[in-house]
Structure formats: structure tokens, C-alpha cells
Length: 106
Image (cartoon, helix red, strand yellow):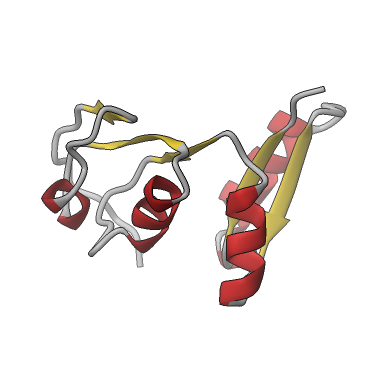
């Protein structure tokens, strides 16, 4: 059986988002929510166990998680924006177009 792993960090810092996400996945037996930081070893173990990575973002910086997934041969879906565009040109990467919008995010 396939499962969807939603990996977040600091979700409790955004109570509205936390509540909305938990309500959206309530009762879904095939969705796992993992919130918190991971060591490098834990991240590699998780990444090694998945078929693909979806990383949609406003600003990714370098895009370490994306690069790690690509190094492991995983399919990647990511935003067509930010530092990851320096290396996201391989055939296993699907780019999602985006446009800039103002945000009120502390």
C-alpha cells in the first residue's frame, strides 16, 4: 500500500496551518504527518524509503533536500523558482510554474 508522508518543521509555530492540515488529513489511514527536525541520517533514511519528493516552496535557497532526492534517483516535483534551478534540469525533475505574490508571513 502506498502512503503519503507530509514532512514539516515547526508546524506548531503556525497554529492555523497546523489545524487546517490536521483537519484535512483526519481519518486518512494512508497519510503520515512528520513534524520536526531530522538528523542527516534520519533524513537519508526517509529519503531512501520514498518513491518521490514533492517540494513546493516560496524560497528554497540551495535546495538540499531536492538535490539529495535527485542523488538517490528519486522523482522530484518542485517549484520552478529559487536556488534549486541551478541544478533541476534532469529528466526526473518536474517543474511547477509559479509567480511572485506579496505575503504577510512573519
